[in-house]
Length: 140
Length: 380
Image (cartoon, rainbow over all chains, first blue to last red; front, side, top):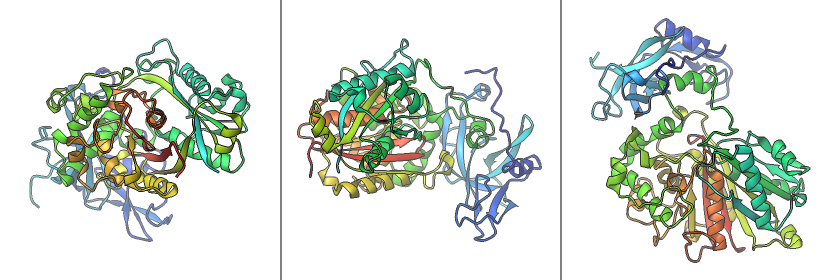
């Protein structure tokens, strides 16, 4: 399907800009509520837990675990050359979840065990960088 | 006041209709539903439908001067929301008779709105860059977590498609009517592991409409068929993007909308003779059965695999064949309601004997929103 079209490139908005700026700097930045101290994702100006507008950007550890995934056999534009790829939802150490791709491992059900440890890597895409996740093999 | 559905009909055909625009499908459904009710457009003073073409265009094309409009557009369950909103509007005296229409050229894409999402939208920033291709790669992403936590097997997931073919094999209008086995389902090509083609819904063209009014007005107007009573309704919503669903093993809006509908109707699960659960993918009826409380957590896969929702089973479910085997235009909720009404009227192709109370659970988006209706062919 449209192998000639490029992969989708996200376009930041003012409230998501710090997330994308962080990714370009090699940091996974998420928001935390100053009032209730809880993290949240996706970027927005109000804490979804307590409603406070007093929120801050923090750098997440980049450590995560595999919450769930599918292996897509119907490539989206730009993905045809990748073979079957994992569209995953990962849970960050800070407790929030985000969609991503699992990379740097063979994409098979046997190889992708739920709850396996992952760590963030960043891939340039157009004028932004995307947070992707790879298996965290080393114990540190 | 009791709200009643006095007209219910689908388009003349469903399936592949390249000569029909989405708009025409709305109008054909509307005409058929009014004829079914024995009413004319002049009896209608309220119109509800989703964003495109929207209630203004539908009302205008039909020559209806609306006193009330609803354009709630929250995915494929929107039409169940419209019924609930119409009930409230009629009760409040804002209007007296509402037409709810659906038409979608999901397969042929004639006169259909573009599918584009902005690259600065929530989806465009946080899901599309990862190679999602619509529902088949997003709605499905919860299933492996559910399987890990409950022990649901691939064979049990496949049995959802098997059970619904048993129903669609009895329905001449269904797109897919050949019986299949679990092995057939698991041998069909992978779309998005763990989902095979036969565990994913069809993509078709079609439409339908309902006429909702008060019991009193239905009696005064003298409608053609006995009314279907809306005993209870509920609605809720969760996350606009699947990755932010609170718990991948249970839908909050399935739970809350069904609790509200059951409470309003004052029914228990044992009262339900017939069930429709929106089945865009094979796991959705599994979540629905558990989240509505028909079975306990982790029991729905075995319940379906053992045949309890199949013909002759104790809880007949998705008796038109569902989105997997009957038709799925994209926003299937209208068709789930139509089958429930046919069963209550005794008009279904695969008629279940003695249906008096039916429940419809509609899903919108990817577990994004949900509404539940409790329908009956008699008052309690």
